[in-house]
Amino acid sequence: MSLFKRQSLMAQPNLPLFSQLSDEMNRFWSRDSIFDRRQSDLLGDWQPDIDVEKKNNVYLIRADIPGVNPKDIKVTMDNGNLVIEGNRETNVEETKENYRFIERAYGSFYRNVHLPDASNAKGIEAHCKNGVLEVTVPIAETAKQKKIEVIVD
Picture 1 (cartoon, rainbow, N blue to C red):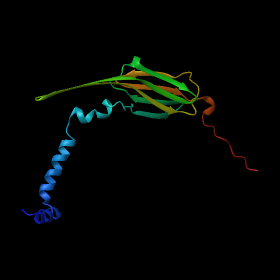
Picture 2: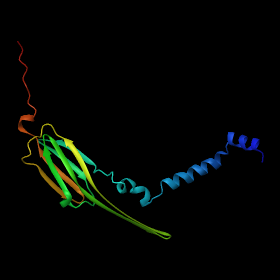
Picture 3: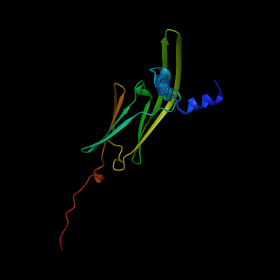
Picture 4: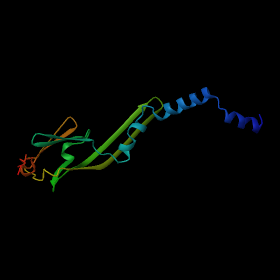
């Protein structure tokens, strides 16, 4: 086949062939494997996902920390900033018919939640159950919303 004919084939690609190639590439990159699933964990850039909810007179903060020993978690409150930090060890092992993959990663994590109306550290509670850290932070009395009556002159 001449170079000219190859170029003309490239100019008008065989769509089923390219579609099949695209499907194969998508299957390769999205395969269900430890290599893909845990890459960010193994590189040490993991941070726990958190939810912050304001209920009545408290903030409720939930952090997903699966596999983290509660003894390795430190929760502090400083100038309206709730800090959740600790250490996590990740052990990954995958064994299939033709290979065995083992990887270990160690690292620290850190999350900071700014709660401007909860500067008082008294009454803060933290509980950990089933891989979820739950922190309850009371809202300071002075920060509670107050309705102000408008006087008509």
